[in-house]
Image 1 (cartoon, one colour):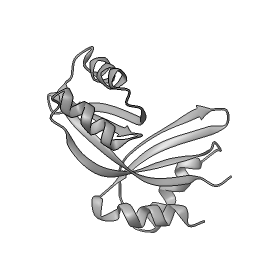
Image 2 (tube, rainbow, N blue to C red):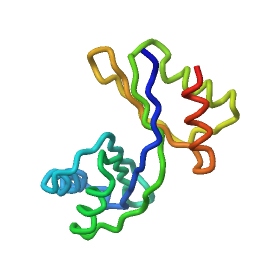
Image 3 (tube, helix red, strand yellow):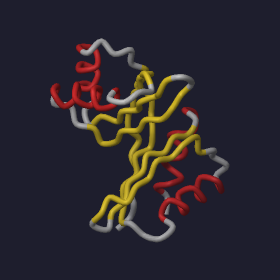
Length: 137
């Protein structure tokens, strides 16, 4: 089966880089009934950037507003799902390199049951073109 490539909205917050912060943010979303299709966090300066890819961006924004988060976004990111195979992510990266599209960041994981998933960031001006390049094959 071919990979599924979707352009989806993501949001982020800057948060303290200390134990329990991520758990607290995720608990707020769970309480609000918000489902995520992807989640990523990493150090940023003296804090952390926490990225959320919600299944329902409207519900996510409402929960963030209620929790009084200083939210950035929506921004766009590529969400990729497919059958796991050797070199799956490498093949995606090569297609983008051949099209002269720089990858800003990528998080990929084997999802089990022979599946994998990835979120892939490119410059905002390249999102639509990257989606087309990856979908063509």
